[in-house]
Image (cartoon, rainbow, N blue to C red):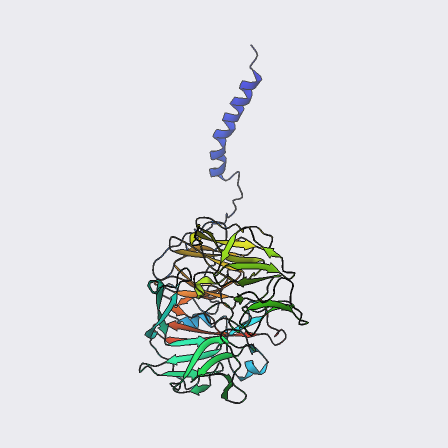
Length: 475
């Protein structure tokens, strides 16, 4: 009887399988083992308040880097926020400034800008974050009735930069005024001198001295008269805007007549067709379009030839011009926020919604379940259920909405972090410029930032542009 070939193979396989352990343990046969890589579990990003954010998965979250110059052990990191941050920055000294670096309020990018801590010599900054509050009041444009008066109260830092100046409030309520290089202009500001928070046509930050507008001349070491006019120099937003904000980027600019009506003209002085003096307000011509407003707040969007865009929808001004409404009035990177309304038979606003419009005449798509908080420097500040993140003008997340605290981008930097925890500064690429190690950080204003740690007090950080590339951006 022949033994089936298949059965023979099976028997041979069983014999070999039984022999393998004997051969291995006897040492007759040796197998070359290799060391497989062991991948540690990726830690979740945490902060000192114990919050554990979870991302949306479509971008890589910025991760706090370890300072390579510090030896890490099993104990807690006892370095101060300044010591943690110094690995990335330099201190302002004679050698640094002598190399020609210029303090700049331009949009930060890592290739052209350097951040440096300002040494203040004998000047002692307060150890307390705040001694008071700021109260801002404004009427909603939808109705100027008294009951629509809005009040916004915020904590006022005791050290706050404004358009390149440094204001230092003391416990007694007196305020010292410092120039951006740390020199003292006034130990105590005169009572008749106040900061306007605006710039004149030459971009000088404006103060009000009594009833006269003035600006500080560092060459003269004194305040001199300014031609600032609050009506004609108004740029459409009420905050410490950088010098490039709200300025024309071409050969068309706004103009007005003696009666206070606005239009546009070309650089050669000729009036733009269809853009004559019939509007009550106008804003800088940017990205090929200008916005003009009628008395009732309705807005026209027109190109350089006077052609109206978005004529099929009803656009009106935002309810107010606070920093909360950044992104209205100007196209930036081809996009602009807009308030679209419908009206009833009497002409009153019936419905309204805020959208993002593109120069192509289309509405720009953003996630519908998120709220656009602001749009500046080409970045949308987004919010959902108390969590914040950022989307670029290209439509991709640069920072997932995982943070409980954020502010708009100003001068290419945004304050991001945790409402009751640490905060840092992020650039428009979603990278940490100052990692979240400070308790409070002010907006960058005129290239100056104040950072506060409750244990060690205030530090001043300044934004300098490379001497080989000092021409400012115009947005």
